[in-house]
Image (cartoon, rainbow, N blue to C red; front, side, top):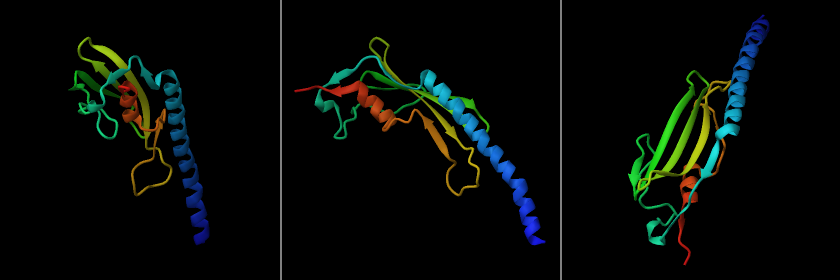
Length: 153
């Protein structure tokens, strides 16, 4: 009798779990399509700076932070815009990072990525599962290092 009850419970849970997994797959497919359209890095101009303008790790010393107001540092703004595409779980958002030269308001580059959070089938103790597109190793760090380059001696 207990086995029948367990089989019935599993029989009801399995389709529900399958549907939850399908929703995550549907949102991932939407994210991949959006990513193909405008995801990734576009470098319009590189800025060559003396070596003393960089930290020991290769980042520019004047970088403050990425934010929606465009933090200023060294004559450049570091702008981050986030847009929620889907607010119910699994969520989907688009982030656009832009580096702008303040002197002439010229965009030096943009980095667009999409992030899906949630949609896991089984309960978790840790954070929700997530997926990012495009998956670029180093992300915003690699992006800023692609624009600001060390002067060759």
